[in-house]
Image (cartoon, rainbow, N blue to C red):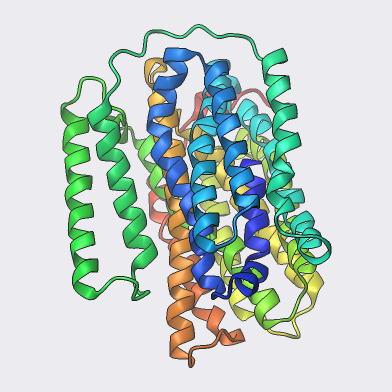
Length: 444
């Protein structure tokens, strides 16, 4: 559900734009607000799990996600839809990292790559089925069913968790770092505000400059506070570890590169090429299929060639592949578009598999939760920033070409996004050849 709604919603943005009478670019907020609100909740999720039990916290957050889904389904304006997505983000921001934390704490280090891989493969069902189902619902029923379908699925999941997931004892989480959570939350809100308003004209120039300055001050205060706190909500000292630093910074640039593709492609295919929502959804279906293939092959490649080799080769290939939609035209064959979408996601997902596991390569056991929290926050923020970057590039390109979205309007956005991914190459090349060697596991 966490992944399905974002991909499904991206598929039907042109439909929503027509119903609500706005530009598809303006609807980026329905995607970014979920990612940012969930990122705000992530720092406190680990403490909640340790304080009240991971199973109980997971169930409560799942109920919150379902409540947000119902609000989205019955929204009558863009503002109401954004509010519903924010409520979903509150639930998802706790639900997803707590689930990941349960898995990480239950796994041996040598099996972590394989375990995390199996943990994420079922989640790909969301982006695999979400887009085509969303397209069919938008054409033959209503987009509102995208969210209503979460209710029976969520209730089934809730019953399975209660029946199958055991109660887990955790060490005392200590004092809740309320000042740290507040500072981090407002800093993330500031980043979201800057990313979502830059270049849009929503704020006057002076107001935007003030927002940037306030955000810089908040980020600085959050970093200084984390450095002084004995039990910080974000353990920034983990950035002293080379593998952790490279995974988050390099992996963040890669997510920035791909983050806007599910947002831009449906707009291009439906608004410019005249594809139906269901046909556009098939592109993301093929992309999700590629993600499954990437996750299946990545562990074997890591065992054979190591983390560094996979991250360098897949990173370059993925960034270049992300640029290819820039050269699509109305006459571009659909099978070629499907093939590029699948190939791009094979490369990106293989890269993510290595990057997500390498986060824990040098992390001591008592900081596993802190590393997981920082990692998930970075993933959420950079994916959302990718959407904002793609939307800004499309807006600027559209303004330059006369104010209407045309085929040429997408050349600049996709080239910018692919270029962001290439910036990660020096980070991966700086890693030792044998980095994460003890996590590669036995060849099978």
